[in-house]
Image (spheres, rainbow, N blue to C red):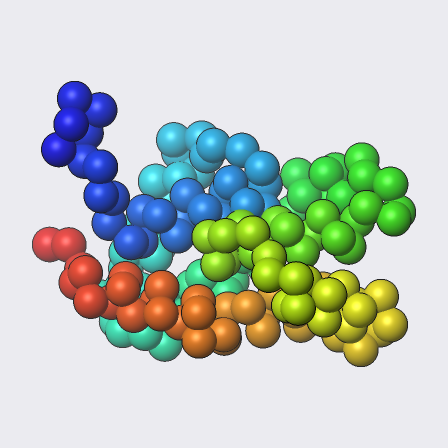
Length: 143
């Protein structure tokens, strides 16, 4: 612990914060953050399937929000899909995209092979994100 608080936040805090930061591009408001964190924590007490379902729904709501629609429309048409991929990698994987994955998913969306929502769902189901789900479950639910 430092003067700024815990330097190692719980994994459900990180995931909730990452969804705000990655998809909406901002720090969460307190009420929204507490609401969504509460939902992720409730799912945490029910196991990996519940956590996956909750984060899946939350990421889908954020991506389909008017706030993200405003971000999307503020980007040039040539920037939209490439920047979306950066948003998804940051929100769900907590990192920037790797070149092969980035190229694959940009190509899939641009060619109509996958919808944006299918790519988002692929990320949620990926072994990399499921490792984050396991960390949330392993941290155990709070009393």
